[in-house]
Length: 74
Image (cartoon, rainbow, N blue to C red):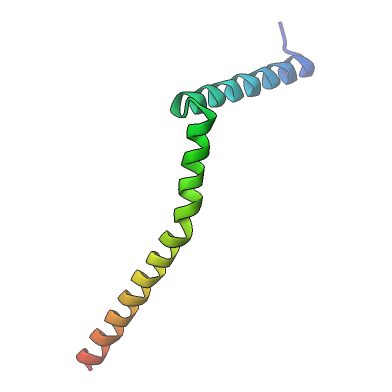
């Protein structure tokens, strides 16, 4: 029996629904309570600028070391 376009569309909608339910279940399993989710998001939001600053400082230090090595090799 050939599939009709509407039947394929219905199956696609159902697949997306199931995938969404799986994602929700996984999120609830990983962080069972809203309070825990809020704490985790707060932690990452709070530490993100500090982490970026540390990465920038590390990158700057590496660039300075490369410049010194270039000067010494000349």
